[in-house]
Structures are given as C-alpha cells and as structure tokens.
Amino acid sequence: MNKQIILNFVVTMIIAVILSLTLPWWSVMVAGFVSALFFNLKRAATFVVPFLAIFCFWAIYAFIISSANDFTLAKKIAILLPLGGNPYALILVTGLVGGFAAGVAAIFGNMLGSLVRK
Image 1 (cartoon, rainbow, N blue to C red):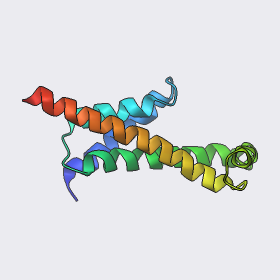
Image 2 (tube, one colour):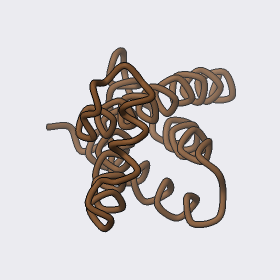
Image 3 (cartoon, rainbow, N blue to C red):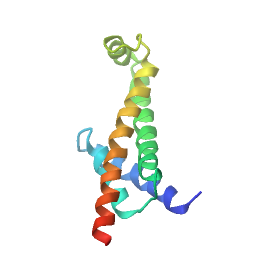
Image 4 (cartoon, one colour):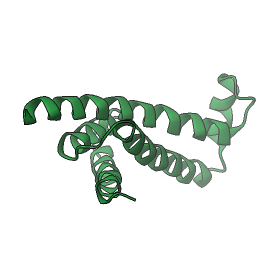
C-alpha cells in the first residue's frame, strides 16, 4: 500500500479525534479537508481514504458510546428512522454520513491544494 495513503488515513483520524473534542459534528469535514490539502492523493483515493478514516472513527465511537448504556438511545432513534429498531444499522448509517461528509470535503481540499500548487 502507498505510504501517502496510510499517512493520509492516520492524519485524518488524528485531526478528527482532536477536533471532535471541542467542535460539532462538522469537524470531520475540516479533518478531511486539511488532510487532503496537504497530502495529494490521486483519483478515487482522494474520496475513499478520508471516507474510510471517518467511517471507522464515527462507527467505533458510536458503538462505544451506545454500548455504555446498552444501546437504549440508539434503539429509540433507530425506531424513528426506517431501520426497524436495529441499533447496529444506526451505527452503520452514522458512519456512512460522517464518511461521506469527510470525503466530499477532502475532494474540495484536494482541488484547492492542486490549484494553489500550480
């Protein structure tokens, strides 16, 4: 695997963890944007690497928080959404939303970085 891909994954994850301590949910977009701004990835990796980093971060974090209270709130939210009351499906959807937001922000960061580098 390419060293730059692994580095982008790790940097995105670290920035997201640090920013999520004080900022709202959109801090993952800042993490994807900043990592893509400084680490130039090619083609689909620009979207996929930050997507996977934030997907893993949010899914694991949501699982840890939900398991602390036996998935009580996650079950209630999953009933409100068309997920059949499945808290694990809600965790998956949570990871997908965060990953998609970070991936789109990373595309913007990569485009802005390539524009500045020219």
